[in-house]
Length: 332
Image (cartoon, rainbow, N blue to C red; front, side, top):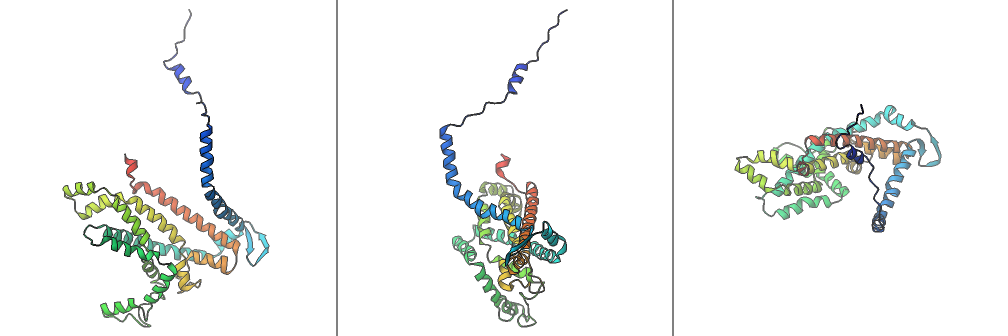
């Protein structure tokens, strides 16, 4: 008895679907456009290769050398010796990290909240001459950091600074003199002092937050007001979620900037770490090893450790972004 095999429906179509699609040929017009695009971005490509990629490769190689800048001919390959020294045999590296991270824990939340608060103020409909105040709040960020740091070193002077004089006048306490508030000499006050100086230059963060606030649809506020929501509920349930990408952006920039914190402590105290090592930030220690002691191999190792720490923290922050950052385009 002859039997016939019945093919399932769509059998031939299934085999056709598994065939590889034909490769589309690139025409002469697409080739010309590709060449033109590469030509226009070639300055950036050359700059990236010469000033980013090549120095990174060179620094990775230097980290395997015992390399003194004063005697480059005596460079000696030591493999992972610099890494072992930095991670296990040099306690100053960990002290510098403790100083840097402790300052970041204090400075970052204050900076984010203050910048967001000033942006709310400058976006308020009840504020008159808003354009004038926006210019005044942004103007300090144009002042060079070195100049502003030197100015604040006099403003916060324990004997002649007007901050201590103002505190004495308002609260009736003796805040000046040897026994007064020593903003730049007390290791406990150093994180708050440097945070106070940094608030002076928050103009960019304020401007970015202000742009985010102006992008929130007013219809959401109107609907919430009709439903009886007060100012705080509108703030927490509408404003903060809608500007969370901007907050996230400022958070990442703030983290990376604080890990590289260098200019203000260097201008005020050099590489001394005064007072009592409270200003011996990681970048200060890196500068001391690489340029003051001319140990370029060890300095390159410290730079790569900073890169890996910043990369790890950034990855963690990006990993948490899904739970609190709202992107309206992804919800449509």
